[in-house]
Length: 109
Image (cartoon, rainbow, N blue to C red; front, side):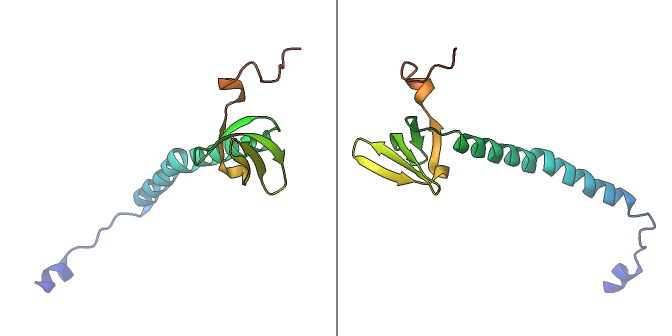
């Protein structure tokens, strides 16, 4: 049985088609997985840098509140139960202009 496997002819083709296929797979992974993650991380970082005092936000855990202070290592959010300190990464979205358009600052000058 082993003699059959040892006598099998070795492929005589080059490795070029295999290398091209591996390269195409890497390019596909880049455009389907890596690039969208990098774009999302860039958007989140930009969002965290544009946070302002007085904005109404929602944290990733679902806590609603208004930003009272912005510090180097996080933000202080004022909720109905008091003030809580969160990391900037814990803020998932802003509700000031979406739900409360009358309290949002006017940029129409």
